Structure formats: structure tokens, C-alpha cells
Image (cartoon, rainbow, N blue to C red):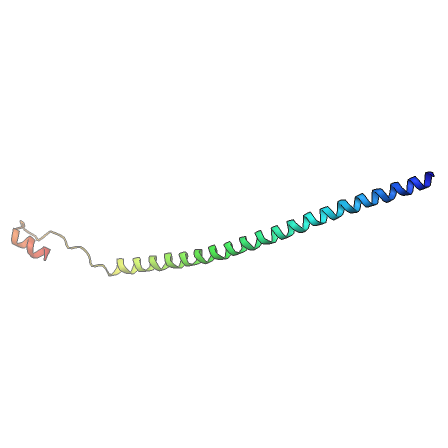
Length: 96
């Protein structure tokens, strides 16, 4: 009977190992699905943020260029030095 008990013990251990491995396989299949979904969500977010960043860089560069052109086109401010004591009439003409 010793070998019979031994065979039953081996079969029992193998069945337990198979049950454990099936449970782990199912667990990892669930994890794989979860991680695939998370990866897709992060990939979509990266794509969206990359587009926003590129648009922002383009807009910033355009604004800087326009500011530089505006500074070059802006006429110099007139000075109030009219060479003599300022009269009210001269100041009004200068302002206009």
C-alpha cells in the first residue's frame, strides 16, 4: 500500500500545483488587460499634451516675433525739449 499512498500523494500535489498555476494565469491575464488599458490611456494623454506643447511653442515664437517687429516699427516718443521756456501753446502743439 505504500506505493499506492505515494502515488495518491504525487497526484494530489500535482493537482494542487495545476490549480495554483491556473489561478495565477488568470490573475496575470487580468493584470495584462489592466496594464494594456492604462498604457493606452497614458499614450493618448502624451499625444494630446505633446500637441498642446507644440502649439504653445509655436504661439510663443510667433508672439515674440510680432513683439520684436512692433518694437522696430514703433516711432520714438517725442521729447518735450522745445529749446526755450515752454508755453502752453507750444505744449498743446507738441501734444497734437
